[in-house]
Length: 254
Length: 274
Image (cartoon, rainbow over all chains, first blue to last red; front, side):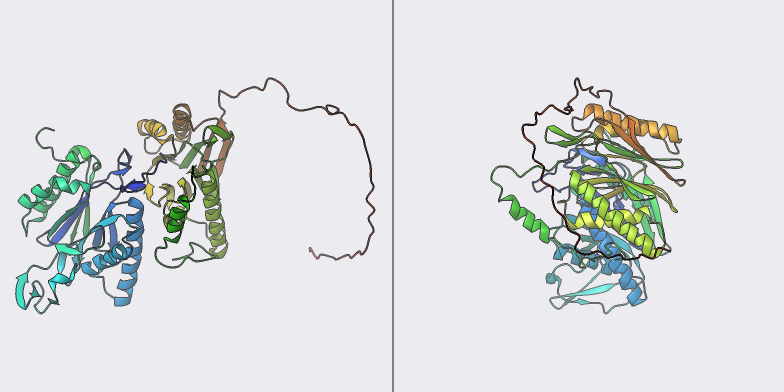
């Protein structure tokens, strides 16, 4: 089908999509569905890979136009690889997210792609998302040791857990959160995520949480579906988990 | 990066200049933007045990007229890489020619056979740069040291890889056949038959696909480009001969004027071809 939609919908192949990332005790789970559609009319691919490795222990999920997202992640991979050679150390997750943010913000007129970045680095441990978003948060004071960071906001020190998942939506904002969801299917699972996510879950609990969330979203969103791709990133390494469509958890009415 | 465009490297970063210009040009045409020749088309590819089989129909349409009944949609890229093209005929032709030239230069420079991923990356970078203005949907298949590969590149620059693919206006018809018949590690005959059936489904069910079916088999041993693999059963027989015999048009007058030529200068240059 060569018809191209001229309205505000994504031109060409769209990832439709449900993407998410969540931190647990000792690592991070990042995952997505695997459906790609054209014009919201038919499924052009049932097994598209939306979880892209941008560095050894940093992964990205893409949403929006597949062409734009693939181009941006390619550029980001290059920048990070170059950056890590220059710094002689693996890049920080926040660096990865910042690279994506720069690309998305500077080209925001032409691009229609959003991302979630998650990974593990030695400085802050497991993180999702990334980046200093807007200037309202004031200056960040990283005076404290390894696991806690203090944010100076209007001269008041607020202790908090360092932002762990980074989300770079359309437009190029950058926000760090312990858990984040994105894509068209995410609207159906905000309630589930808000209710069920707990910080410092175990690896199995977090994997189950992510699988359930993806299954619920895929069940309701027509442009999300296929298999659930999950990647578990910890200090020791990276593990891919693929849950085929028929093995996804079933809920009532299914 | 690397050798994507050997003769002229594009500037770093995204460049959307042409997209703005094209948007402005659209406003200049009052009635309709002139329609380019499209291939309408069913193209498909399947990875089998020893390589890749590519298939395509041979009809090129210009709106409702069949512009070319025996058009070649399986383009040569490299000795081990071929590409099927759907979309605007000129775009697929020129894009694949450009890719082929660049890869030949690369091969000569580096002394290596190109890999399919390299071809895919070059195509992706080029098509993305043009932001969908180049209407080329391509299926690239090839065999290299890393195995048997099949990729699809969309007009906006998205890339996907699968063991079986179909593109073009007849893709859904072909995909039905492929989804039903595909198995991993098919034998050559079964793979050829599967691709033929897929293209045939496109030919039968899509108005813009038709005429004959071409097949191209790529293996480590070489390439077998069978053109046509299946001839259309609806091929028409012309009722009369349209060739005019000598004497059909009467000659009324004849005037012969010899042109006088004078040898002004003659030089002989020996070429050493030893």
